[in-house]
Image (cartoon, rainbow, N blue to C red; front, side, top):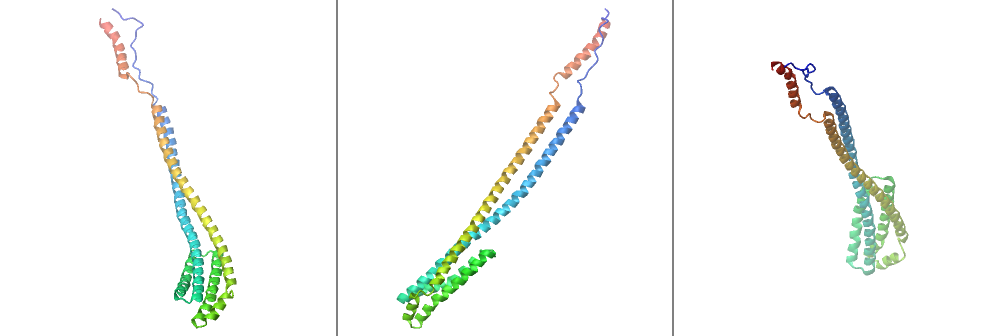
Length: 262
């Protein structure tokens, strides 16, 4: 039995190859991924530098805010101590009791140290330092005025000491001292408010830096997942039944020979 004339062996055909296109696509994807990762790394470095600077500035702002608040506290202590000195002096002159004199002497002893502490918290700011010098000068003048009646009383002239106290001696100095203290307190409070605003700004910058680092990490993760998806898309679905098809081709090629043998 002769084989049909229109039957010819089927040539073996392999699946069309897209290796070159796949390689080109993978190269494009790899370049985009590399650029994305480099951009994310650069953003992370810049954000880290900005966060470090913000953190450093925040620490400085906290220190400046602390100094400003301490300045207000030391000024209040100076004012209270001066009032204690005046009260102790008056109590001693009116009663002659040593316990009032002790209050006066302790207050006079504390004032220089308190003024020195106040001066150290000003950080050599010219306007505030000038106000502090004026305050210190008035405090010293007031202490000198308080000391005069005390010396008269100690010398045995209690009546002269009382007359000097009741004459309003030192009243003008005390009034000037109150005015200077109030203006100084206003300036110190304004400086404290400015330092508080600086601290809040630095705190916000640090928070933005934290969010920026999270965003950069999320972007790098998203870019990596996109790269994996792109590579999977270029590779295409797997070929199912490839070996079986090739075997069918070989079987078809052998059929003419089998017919000749028959």
